[in-house]
Image (tube, rainbow, N blue to C red; front, side, top):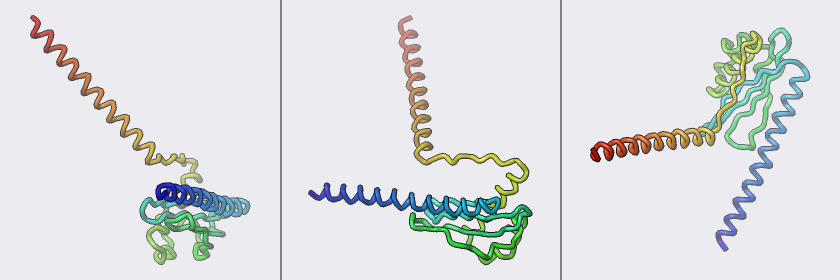
Length: 170
């Protein structure tokens, strides 16, 4: 009976996580779309695996001045975007040189630097978005490499034993 109870709790927790994750994605989309309607949006991210992650959205006008800024920071799926008015009025080209960043935490500074870097690359036409590789995909690659390595070692042993047996026959 205990195993069924634990299974039910795990399933409920999983469904709750999916539901709250979808709400977080909906929150991101609504903030992004609202900013996109007003102009360009620079997105800076500082992903976190163990430490909290940060996403910074900067609404930028045609001259490069930040008109609106919102940031989501946290480790849980309960994190939501919050306005960051201290970024408004700053030229995105000088964002990392701005004194406002000295008052921010390290994760926010990294997300702001990422937003500026990507914005400048897109402005120059040099940006190519690289899809992140999932840890599961990395694990799959590592297992495939190990399998090939073992197969190679076994085939070399087979070749050596075949060579030895033919050598002893002569």
